[in-house]
Image 1 (cartoon, one colour):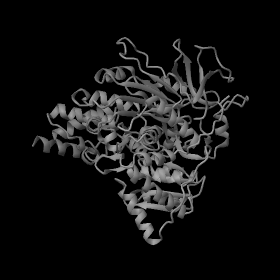
Image 2 (cartoon, helix red, strand yellow; image 1 turned 90 degrees about the horizontal axis):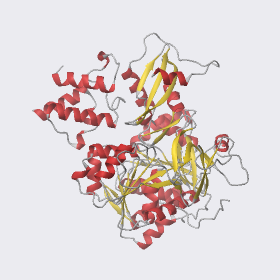
Image 3 (tube, chains in turn orange, green; image 1 turned 120 degrees about the vertical axis):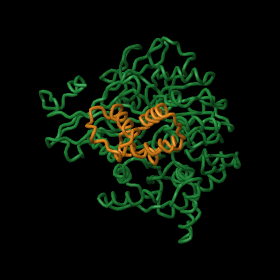
Image 4 (cartoon, helix red, strand yellow; image 1 turned 135 degrees about the vertical axis):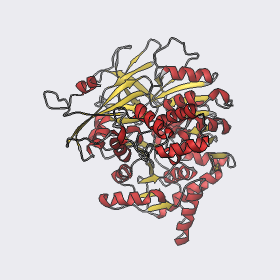
Length: 82
Length: 526
């Protein structure tokens, strides 16, 4: 697991899944389509990513096609930092 | 009381007249997909009318719309009305089982559906029985999807030109389904007179001009859309459709308000709060914006204050009312909002086409200033719930010869300025992101999970989001499903705005002495 995946997971567990067993959240768990991230939670996640990694998200990237799993998110952040 | 003055014009007459006066004016803009003039919108809706008549649709029938928001859908709405039928818009984002229930419940005699939803709907209907005749659109956008679907049907057999139906004031114009406490949505029946009296009142309030550009933010199955669509198109103004994806994204939304030069905005407060926090409003040119309307839930005062500071010099109006009456009271916010004010703004005074009163548990008017239930009578009040005579009867005060008084279920009092102030609910309904949610419908959804033995849901007030929904569950097996599993299950079985914020597993739910779930103790559990 990459560092980005790890810290994104920790952030989601702490903010949106309090009390959940960390092993239940895998890199491929659907986040937006799985009802874990609503629109406000997605905004909060994006702000966290922008602040933590110094990247900027385009408006059209904030959707299930780009951010639905921890793996998707890590890939997108890596590409932006790349 | 409540003189039933017949309204001359059916709702669709306003579009027909606007198309005659301003044929070349742009009626609807669908960003990214195109726009349509009044003359073309009128013509396209005539074609829908003719096709529906050819399919056997008659006065008093219901026609389902299972379409994403688009120019196509606006044309379909007017086509249904012109055919003399009532339109029944369902939420394309909701689970197919819920939409299929609605279409079956009110026995639509025809359905306009996008092909992407077609197979899920057919699967659901296998259990429910006969599917109505359908117009299947390969896609929607700019009106072209609808035109293409009508062209294809015309090639098989051309629809004959037919007459626009001159609906009577009491004929149904649309049925909007809202959350029902038994777990099944219930259909609120609104007539042409209900709609037109509301639209005319909006004209008084807003004094729209042909140069206005109205937002259409709310989905069409939501009653805010009645103002957006029908008030805008009555006045020859331009309706700017906001898609579901953009609608939840404050940054893109703010760009759209600026880029499309929206002048009259209407949405739930939660969207405006997001815009004010994340939309970077001060950096944008929102000079066209002149009126901001909000409805559907309490606007937390700190967010409203910030918004009015970011965008000063506009009219801000709080519109209040359940789907059963559409807007029944209104309050124009006095600016600036004092820094020390902690109370939300009041819901205001009765709209001119309705009468409001505050009553006690016996239905008798209380003294000014005392709290009680708000009841509403007049031309905007619904006809009842579809095929639910008992619930319809219970929705009104017993007839005392003084008119039909609809019971809102909302507890209010009249403040010294003569404005009604909202206090809370009499029952188990809450407002979330502007949607009304019966906690019983969430519980019914949770019970569908194979491992859920007991389910109870409580709503806890929350300063940030208005309300948090907490689910308490007990399990049939020792190891209960994970939180992620429950959220995913809910995402598949309930509309997104009904998914609980938290899930708490108990060995068994606390009970009262009569063996009912003890909601008071659940609230204390936190």
